[in-house]
Length: 125
Length: 125
Image 1 (tube, helix red, strand yellow):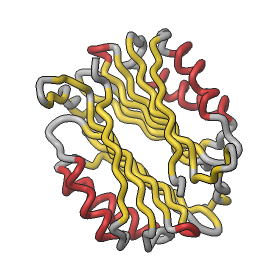
Image 2: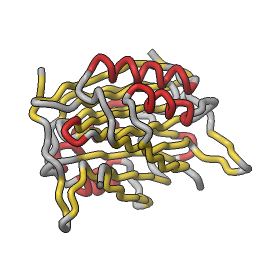
Image 3: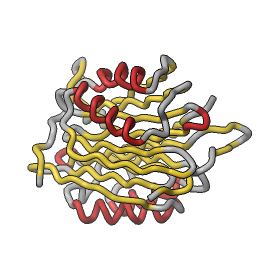
Image 4: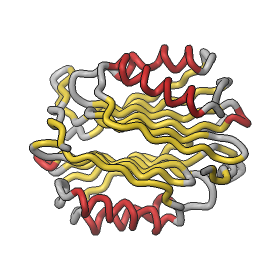
């Protein structure tokens, strides 16, 4: 199956390939709950207006989860370290999506207000 | 299946969850060749000393490829824009791996010397 490629993003007169949010959650809960994490990635993708193509996850032992959502507009990744209450997300999106719309979904799902976000514009000339 | 979780990384006295390389390739070739991209991600994972758990990819129309490698040590992602010779990679690794070892693999595979790398330490206190 192929999917139409998203066009380049243009913000404030600058054209770039996509916006990449690097997101760190501290003091987070539910980080060893694979089903919860998968459901949250689905909710996050929907909130941003992205199209979910596939979702993959892996449970680590004794704890920790990796989940990756492949989107028509790029991806969302999640890696968790329940033992320190930390989760690393990144959200890469291009086209007509709003990656920031995922942030309140993550705060709610993982019950933390300590969310640190770095915004990168990828593929700028 | 579960996999032993990697331990926290320690560099120069600082403990953090993982090293995250944000990698931009410009002037790159072979960016619409899904098989080549998958093979390159396998080579890159092997070069870093990581363990590949699964590999997923998607072909866009009329051009462009997304590929994601899920590793025991986190992930490698790739999104390509063949029309502008640009590819966005990110390599997130924890444990006893060397994500920088992937860089010459990418330069060789996509025939460019224009590789721009930003190094992030994720999950530092």
